[in-house]
Length: 424
Image (tube, rainbow, N blue to C red; front, top):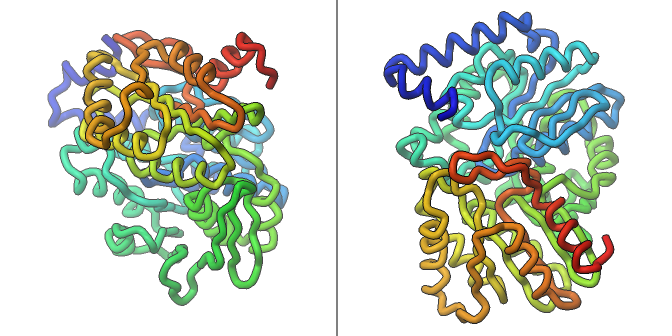
């Protein structure tokens, strides 16, 4: 049993909040309250956090600033960047405060963090002096952990309640009014649907196999990143940069240089077929991934995926199956992070959504071993097919029956491609 589980078992729920708060205070004190020496930007929402953080970081770096960022994909401090070794987006308080301290020590001006609802619930955001809070979007997720969607949204809102300077908000999200009510010295809104005064508004959006194009105030942006969702991520990053004095021209210059985001629609191999690895693990993110790949020339789409266990959002499993069935020619169900749940039961719940669509069973495989599942997807792929490996992105661990298994979908895919004699 983990230390965290032991603590949760020993300490009454009524006192857990105080325990987490005190840890936050102790860790900040231990490292000398480093956030006071940085411009700290917190990005929260259901989707797009990592990409928004990295895009904003790249823009700020374009103008010569030294930047640190902490995302579920990578952790960067100045020139040094590494994959996130934690199996969580926002690690514990001591890890976060040490990250901020290292950013100060390295001479960084900015620190950009993904801020999760679970992190907020456990006061991991406390004693961090946020200059800017960013809201990307809000969709049902982690409902079991929070008890209700309203509680989930409430946790997100606490970041804005504690951040008084800059608020950046996705005006196209149906929950934006909830976040608009929190006071701030300056509010920046972005969107692509209903233009408002003083809004960072994307017009003339075009998607293609080369990426996504849009314009802001007659300035054309040509992203190399696929998908309309990346237009929204870019808009959020542009607003972050504007809040720190950057120009639209500088934003354009930086954004157009970016070719990929690790584990986010990451193209592992292009020929003779394409393999794309993506973190997508919610119904909305599945919809976005499949919409995006439709713009790529292809014959068949082969989808390899599962769903996390540990009692997490069980409601979404049939929906994931349904969406995949409606957009795939072949489906291979496999482990994602079953934790202590029965892996076969997880697959059965996903399968229930697939079968309701009338998906042809000869094209449905169930292979619990994720490596073997990926290998099967690669072996089934023909010229110009697309293999989607979904659910983990850059995650470096797989959680199976209480064990942490070293993992990286991208690396496993490359190893299996090599075994099949396919160069990368």
